[in-house]
Length: 517
Image (tube, rainbow, N blue to C red; front, side):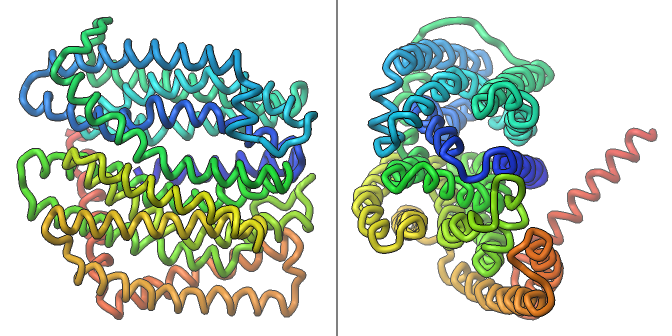
């Protein structure tokens, strides 16, 4: 999962580099980013929660109980019903795109760029049906511990957008990116997932049997889970809504900063949360609370072990990283500090987003979905006015900072509540681990600062080449120092990752030996 998602995030960076080179931090990029707000809103509320955490536990339980026929009936009924609902929602959104975009995405845009945003939104909207159908098929694979489709889907999606930026944009300008996104959504979510499902075996019988006990069970879980998993994305949408009052370029700057922050978050947090989720479900279904607590504690320690140093690395080197990735073509040296300010404050919350992703799935595995929604709704109620006041005080930086604060509040609230529910989460062990990680990360930060100061002494780090020298010189030594310090502090996570790597390599060796026989 980590390897595939890393590839996806690297392609995502290449995608953003293409966009930055072709269009810079222009109003066109602001319109392009805003064009995804309404489609994302539909997807998060009408499908994402059910796909990620409501459908999978129920489908997995029926498979575990040797009721495969019922499991596929549940899949078929949900696919038909939600497919009809989402298709109707997309058609209505196509009709009422303009007022919806004004309300949800770009209330502060000028009339010219509002019109452009509306036309781009209409291109992207049908992709949400493709994401839903592909995601539901991916869910059946994940229930059987098969993660390839989920991991590679975004890779193909990003390739589609890159194709749109490099090829289609020559004739269609910024709209080429949207057509590329639509092509990538079809290829990555429908074509590839369908072939993966055929190999694994599947059964689809069109029906609308909404009274099936399994469908009813998914329905009861779905609404709060949809809301719970949508809240982090709603925070990003709220950021964009406020940024539109600053200007189209502010929307573009926040997007560039957020995309870079998503690299470590996606590689470590998304991969870890998705991979641990079926294990948590299995322990919860068997009422194995000690094992459930141990798995959740391990997931938290492992993810924080990876994300806290990543946060420190990005915070110290935010501007050189932005220059290295984006500064080319129409993305100028003057644009970099604006995007890097957003990146810095977004990155401060990476550990919280990561922790939240794991803890929320702990609740979903226990089929206690309302807690995540209630706590998230309270935090969002705080988050909205916080956006306004921090935007007034700090501009774009304040919007990014408010997101990190909200994520931190949500993570700690969920941790306290889950600790009470499971009668402990090994908090002391977790605190000791985090303390060691923070100490090692501080040393890593010092190495990064020293590298930046040293390079600045003989090279212009405001250029792309100078910034690349800073990041390149700091990268390997900072990792080596971090691992060395955690090893000296005897962090348990070092041993865990060594064991995991050895196990993976041994499985590959065994597979090679069998193939030779």
